[in-house]
Image 1 (cartoon, one colour):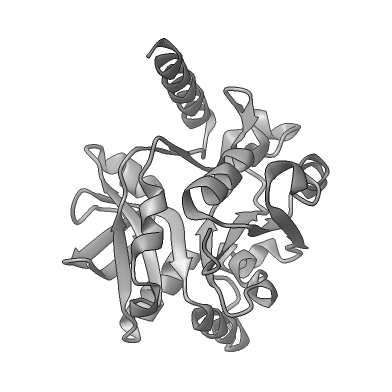
Image 2 (tube, rainbow, N blue to C red):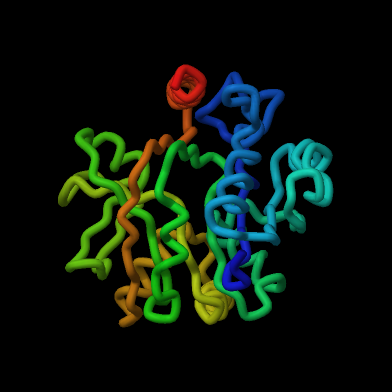
Length: 252
């Protein structure tokens, strides 16, 4: 196990694009082959990255998440909860709410609606955390529409030189995923961004601001299956992928 990381799972959004599923169920609690996606994220953090403590940022239907996971003991982790009462400030605010729990550790940030399957994400812990203010997971894709739904990544070698949230055009085939390793001092700069008058801020734009301010941001080459659960079609695709993967394992 590593003591270098604390998990951070922003789960405050209402999932408007995933309706009708999200009328009565938080999209992070959508069952994918019988398991809520947040549980899959917790499993990944615990088993692949050695994370023992996780902060979940709650908002829409947050009580259902806390009721299901409790203190985390049934899932082999220690869970903390924070309620985001300012959803209008963007999801960077949710990340910032985990700052009091970091205690000098790096944060592994993964959104509650990020679906990962059969990945190499555990290898992100082998990177030199101190060399980068932030590390972002990236993957080449064939479909530019996927990048436009997430964010684009431009890099020079392993160093990221630009991030653009929901780009109108794509500069290359690199898809950015909402999984980041964040150095603890970066949280201070994030706090200062809001203290400086930023009314709203998404975390991708904040990391791009860091790059422009001279910070070194690294990239991690992701391998495996990834789906952003941002609408009904993506949720159904994740369901199919998880079931197929399980059946293949059972047959082998």
